[in-house]
Image (tube, rainbow, N blue to C red; front, side):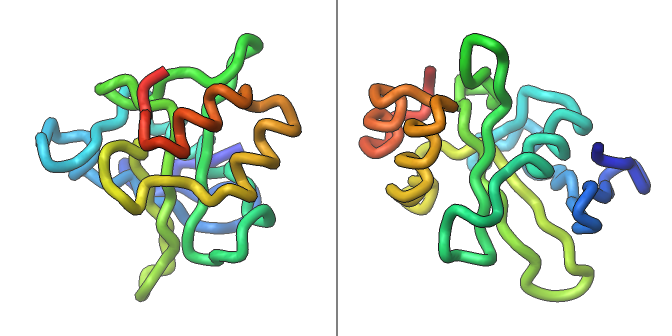
Length: 134
Protein backbone atom coordinates (compact mmCIF):
# COMPACT_ATOMS: atom_id res chain seq x y z
CA UNK A 1 0.00 0.00 0.00
CA UNK A 2 1.18 3.52 -0.78
CA UNK A 3 2.69 5.42 2.13
CA UNK A 4 2.52 9.19 2.38
CA UNK A 5 5.96 10.75 3.00
CA UNK A 6 4.79 14.38 2.82
CA UNK A 7 1.77 16.24 1.46
CA UNK A 8 2.71 15.56 -2.19
CA UNK A 9 5.27 12.73 -1.92
CA UNK A 10 4.41 9.04 -1.64
CA UNK A 11 6.28 5.76 -1.66
CA UNK A 12 4.67 2.64 -3.10
CA UNK A 13 5.25 -0.99 -2.14
CA UNK A 14 7.92 -1.43 -4.86
CA UNK A 15 9.97 1.32 -3.20
CA UNK A 16 9.37 3.75 -6.07
CA UNK A 17 8.59 7.38 -5.28
CA UNK A 18 5.48 9.13 -6.56
CA UNK A 19 4.79 12.88 -6.71
CA UNK A 20 1.27 14.33 -6.55
CA UNK A 21 1.79 17.15 -9.05
CA UNK A 22 -0.21 20.28 -8.14
CA UNK A 23 -0.71 21.27 -11.80
CA UNK A 24 -3.15 18.37 -12.12
CA UNK A 25 -5.20 19.56 -9.12
CA UNK A 26 -5.26 23.36 -9.49
CA UNK A 27 -8.10 23.69 -12.02
CA UNK A 28 -5.84 24.63 -14.94
CA UNK A 29 -7.74 24.25 -18.22
CA UNK A 30 -4.47 23.28 -19.93
CA UNK A 31 -3.87 20.23 -17.73
CA UNK A 32 -6.12 17.27 -17.01
CA UNK A 33 -7.36 17.29 -13.42
CA UNK A 34 -7.68 14.42 -10.96
CA UNK A 35 -11.12 13.80 -9.43
CA UNK A 36 -9.79 11.29 -6.88
CA UNK A 37 -7.87 11.88 -3.66
CA UNK A 38 -4.11 11.66 -3.17
CA UNK A 39 -4.20 8.11 -1.79
CA UNK A 40 -6.32 6.90 -4.72
CA UNK A 41 -3.95 8.56 -7.20
CA UNK A 42 -0.88 6.95 -5.59
CA UNK A 43 -2.67 3.59 -5.47
CA UNK A 44 -3.58 3.75 -9.17
CA UNK A 45 0.14 4.28 -9.85
CA UNK A 46 1.13 1.48 -7.50
CA UNK A 47 -1.16 -0.98 -9.31
CA UNK A 48 -0.22 0.19 -12.83
CA UNK A 49 1.46 -2.69 -14.66
CA UNK A 50 5.16 -2.12 -15.22
CA UNK A 51 5.78 -5.24 -17.27
CA UNK A 52 3.28 -5.00 -20.13
CA UNK A 53 4.95 -2.46 -22.41
CA UNK A 54 8.52 -1.96 -23.53
CA UNK A 55 8.63 1.65 -22.32
CA UNK A 56 10.30 1.94 -18.92
CA UNK A 57 9.38 5.60 -18.55
CA UNK A 58 5.60 5.28 -18.98
CA UNK A 59 2.85 3.39 -17.24
CA UNK A 60 -0.91 3.31 -17.57
CA UNK A 61 -3.38 2.70 -14.78
CA UNK A 62 -7.03 2.17 -13.98
CA UNK A 63 -9.06 2.43 -10.81
CA UNK A 64 -11.27 -0.61 -10.77
CA UNK A 65 -14.62 -1.36 -9.14
CA UNK A 66 -16.45 -4.71 -9.31
CA UNK A 67 -18.25 -3.43 -12.43
CA UNK A 68 -15.09 -2.21 -14.22
CA UNK A 69 -13.03 0.98 -14.49
CA UNK A 70 -14.20 4.09 -12.64
CA UNK A 71 -13.91 7.79 -13.44
CA UNK A 72 -10.69 9.35 -12.11
CA UNK A 73 -10.63 12.70 -13.94
CA UNK A 74 -12.82 15.78 -13.66
CA UNK A 75 -13.84 15.53 -17.32
CA UNK A 76 -14.85 11.89 -17.07
CA UNK A 77 -11.45 10.37 -17.81
CA UNK A 78 -10.91 6.80 -16.60
CA UNK A 79 -7.34 6.07 -17.71
CA UNK A 80 -4.22 7.41 -15.98
CA UNK A 81 -0.87 8.02 -17.64
CA UNK A 82 2.28 8.00 -15.52
CA UNK A 83 5.63 9.42 -16.55
CA UNK A 84 8.87 8.10 -15.14
CA UNK A 85 11.64 10.08 -13.52
CA UNK A 86 13.95 11.97 -15.86
CA UNK A 87 16.19 13.61 -13.27
CA UNK A 88 16.65 13.61 -9.48
CA UNK A 89 14.62 13.29 -7.42
CA UNK A 90 13.64 10.01 -9.06
CA UNK A 91 9.87 10.39 -8.74
CA UNK A 92 7.05 9.37 -11.01
CA UNK A 93 4.03 11.58 -11.58
CA UNK A 94 0.76 11.08 -13.41
CA UNK A 95 -2.48 12.53 -14.67
CA UNK A 96 -5.80 11.47 -16.16
CA UNK A 97 -5.15 10.68 -19.82
CA UNK A 98 -7.21 12.90 -22.06
CA UNK A 99 -7.07 14.79 -25.30
CA UNK A 100 -3.31 14.82 -25.96
CA UNK A 101 -1.92 12.61 -28.76
CA UNK A 102 0.58 10.93 -26.42
CA UNK A 103 -2.23 9.85 -24.12
CA UNK A 104 -3.07 6.75 -26.17
CA UNK A 105 -1.90 3.55 -24.50
CA UNK A 106 -0.04 0.96 -26.56
CA UNK A 107 -2.06 -1.78 -28.23
CA UNK A 108 -0.30 -4.55 -26.29
CA UNK A 109 -1.54 -3.03 -23.02
CA UNK A 110 -5.11 -2.64 -24.29
CA UNK A 111 -5.03 -6.24 -25.48
CA UNK A 112 -3.71 -7.46 -22.10
CA UNK A 113 -6.40 -5.50 -20.26
CA UNK A 114 -9.24 -6.66 -22.50
CA UNK A 115 -8.01 -10.29 -22.43
CA UNK A 116 -7.71 -10.10 -18.65
CA UNK A 117 -11.22 -8.63 -18.45
CA UNK A 118 -10.12 -5.34 -16.84
CA UNK A 119 -11.79 -3.52 -19.73
CA UNK A 120 -14.14 -4.60 -22.49
CA UNK A 121 -13.24 -4.76 -26.17
CA UNK A 122 -15.56 -1.77 -26.70
CA UNK A 123 -13.65 0.27 -24.07
CA UNK A 124 -10.33 -0.70 -25.69
CA UNK A 125 -11.69 0.44 -29.07
CA UNK A 126 -12.76 3.78 -27.55
CA UNK A 127 -9.26 4.34 -26.16
CA UNK A 128 -7.70 3.50 -29.54
CA UNK A 129 -9.90 6.24 -31.04
CA UNK A 130 -8.91 8.77 -28.36
CA UNK A 131 -12.26 8.72 -26.52
CA UNK A 132 -11.46 9.10 -22.82
CA UNK A 133 -14.85 9.36 -21.16
CA UNK A 134 -16.72 6.28 -19.94
